[in-house]
Image 1 (cartoon, rainbow, N blue to C red):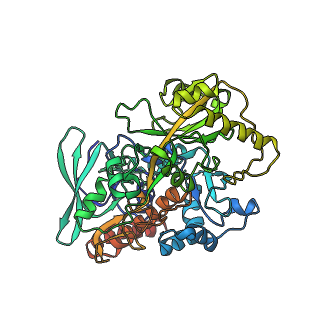
Image 2: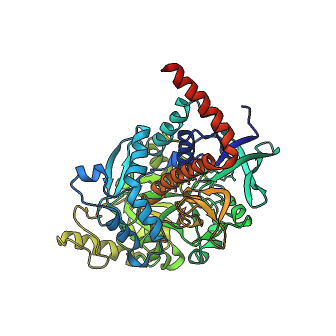
Image 3: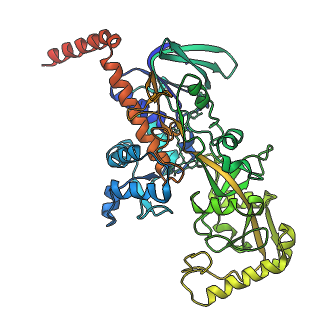
Length: 503
Ligand SMILES: Cc1cc2nc3c(=O)[nH]c(=O)nc-3n(C[C@H](O)[C@H](O)[C@H](O)COP(=O)(O)OP(=O)(O)OC[C@H]3O[C@@H](n4cnc5c(N)ncnc54)[C@H](O)[C@@H]3O)c2cc1C
């Protein structure tokens, strides 16, 4: 496809933030060129859940839930979280219109609400069909407007172009190594986080430096090179140490580097044990990176095992970035994964299992026996961890299975600082002309919308929101800037002529 070398706005990144920005540019009648180093549209969202944290939505109202901006911001700021309160208020005040509304405009319904750790009410809105459908519907919107050809793939941005103080384009490299310059009157960066880059994650987060083994569980394309490039051009980076790490990662046996991991989740009838064979955490709190990760990091070797009867393995869900949407049923994925992974051990007896995973057999047997007596006692909560025991089955029958877990980097929560118009700020707090940033690159908004203790759904929600803001303000800035005048006057003249003729 022919690529123009000059346009109004270059959008770098074809994920959910870049898509939201580009749709705003299109709505503002601004010409754009979208580029991405991947070979297709969709970014991280294409294989994610893209559930959104929204307060006071129609779905919450229908479900009889009372929620709103002040409550959500209070939840977010709890426990001394270092989130950006101004951005958080800005986001939650407008999320119903700008995030819920955006999904609905794409034709995507929300079909469920989930209550995650950190939220005082069910606030995570699940889009029907997940990220694959959301991004497919976004792609269709571009196609409907005849704008699909504005997106170009297999192009990596290697630098920004400057004209004095103004950013005026990007340097790119093609997949075959050719280099070129693309010029524009503004550039919107929406290149995601750096959760695919373990070296950068460790360097940014002192907490992770000492982890014996750390897994990468974000999009492999999330390498963070635009963080470095933007900083070289004077951008301020904010809260880069807020690397959101989950406790429920297990190595991906298919990855020869041994660095990639997948998330294991949703199984209830299990316990987690450490190297001593003892429980240490409320196992139900494993979906977020809030309490579970801190607890795992304090265990010997920063590792633990999910212990469960082999018969319950099919209940386990694997959430894996490598699985193409629609290519595999969850049951087949899980069965294949567990039959191949060297981090899954099986044995007829607990004694045998303990030997395989290297924990003290007597302690493991006692942990399981104590757990079963607790469940048989009819207690409602676990005195050790306060886990809710309602509905849990005793773990009485072998053969047994253990899945080894390590910390897994999933998302990055800090990034390029911006103002409320998503203009990139330099280290003195002044906007860098012509440069906007949105999505995970910009800490979902402003540089650190979510802080170090995010609420689930703030990443997708914040990426859509900041993408829209960046697109709107880039369009507005161009419409009002001097150079745009002539083209706009010509277009306006043409449309008023058409209107006159129609009348
Ligand atoms: C498995 C998984 C599930 C998730 N589920 C949820 C969820 O349910 N709710 C939630 O809130 N968050 C979720 N997240 C996080 C959320 O999906 C992301 O934060 C969000 O999608 C980021 O969007 P983005 O547009 O900013 O970046 P991305 O979607 O990462 O897009 C960035 C794009 O930029 C491109 N790019 C990068 N560098 C360059 C370069 N130098 N040149 C050209 N192109 C470049 C990349 O190829 C990529 O396509 C999930 C994350 C993962 C990994």
